[in-house]
Length: 457
Image (cartoon, rainbow, N blue to C red):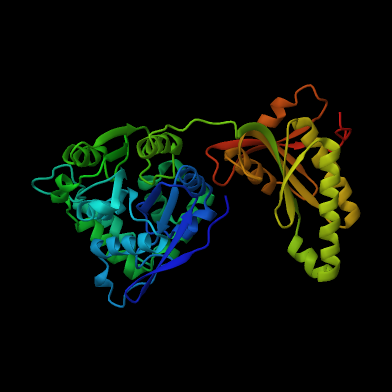
């Protein structure tokens, strides 16, 4: 699914940036994932992108940055950033896209804005889904389950702009909010970078204080929309007691306890969470359909394409790309592959046979050298989802990350592919375990022996 164009709604003098993913009769308005990270960053984080694409697979997903965050303008006076203005931003976006009524989806701190919208605008609220929510964060005499003030102050201190970008403070944040991704160095770097881009230090401080000091418990009985509250069992801030408190006080709300400790919804076991959301808002639980098939995915990439293009000049580089594309088509025909798309300086293809996919990759590498270019390739086998002329799914992400780890002229494959071609005569060299960006857990990678046969049998 392609990243949609960012558009802008107007609220007074402010521009509120939004995106619309997918299509359909049902609208889901996402008020936030509980971070100060712009929705525009989803395309660079595979976990978040997969989460977004899954939501957009069963509804028209409307996502926006409230004032002061990411794509949207900030008011001159940051004191004007309130949950009431957050709601006004949401309504402005709904009006801009022609949505009269939507299922509201919000996580963690953004659930406060969703509660306010649902309570004060029942005519615009079809249903309400809250993930790891709280109606009040701070402890109080009548709220023993609240977060200790010392912990809140520690978090707010972490918004200090002078803290190291990838130091212990970032890791501490992730241990608290996204522990399943805390040991992934690529995710840590993305989190540090995206957090800084999402909200400046002053805006982050105001929004952090707003969340910490809010108390919307009085609104819970006023929510009339059908409500689903999802909470991960081992989440620390807010703990599961906060979710139960919210569900117990919204009339007729359904509470579902999920495994895991991640507060951020797109980290951890997202499938279990998304299954519950889909069933609640559509009435139908997700079931893999005939558009999901088992395939071997091949990614190829021209090594140092930018430098090569500069060396050759525009005219010669265009000729090389045309020759490369023709080569890819010929070899795919020879080895029974299906061309999916051109990636700019490479290609994506699928195969029914992992052995033929490997031999195709080797043949491409050898023939590319005659064009004066070097290719790298990566393969993984798994279930993919057909999305029109494109393909998606975790297997596609894994293949792309395997390809990115390859050297010039090298063909790398996942352990799954090695198991599937046992007895084919193709030999491999162990490249050890790798942490692949956006892929849970380490994966063992193997390099294909370049003496493997290239016949199409």
